[in-house]
Length: 112
Length: 117
Image (cartoon, rainbow over all chains, first blue to last red; front, side, top):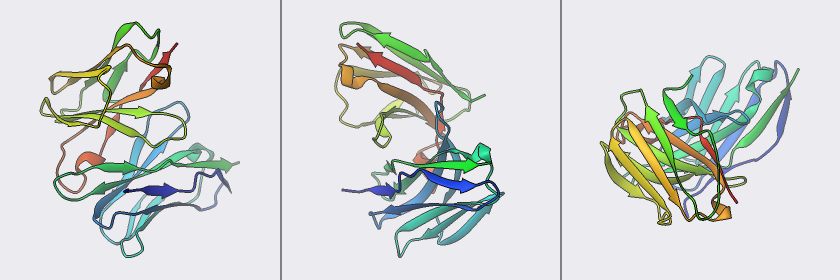
């Protein structure tokens, strides 16, 4: 069974701190990794994706990928109350049968 | 404001009703999707269309019937639903189903919240 696991939280951080969201996956053939943000009552919105080992930065967001450890993370620097949302990790496998496998999401609260 | 619009936003129906959900994308994408989101479950892929052709039916019960008349429009026809079908139904589109982003770079509509009584 191919799985994506996330800590459901809630994760609570003070405003201005670094929020660290983690995701592990079971399929070693996974190719690309996605982070989505979902505000309460809204639909998911793609924040960024990564496919190479290492870090990828976009503004206050940094995605980190370690394929050997089957681990992907999202760091949010200078966290703001507007970052309070559920963050969904999704993993795309390779091959002809490309499927996107979703985690349950981590709820993040940023306290002013 | 999203490039993918869904109607209706809320729908309440009885188990014997027939209704349809509509989705329209204004992004020029080639692939469209129906997802189901329920509490405490990961997003569930229901159907995938690439260039109007259905390429995925993820073992969805026949009481859900998709229709894709063109690359911009997607429907989900509902009939004889069960209370456990109550959920948020999300439509999404993506530029395509290939490449490193492929089916992972999704643009979602705001969803249709369905309640089956």
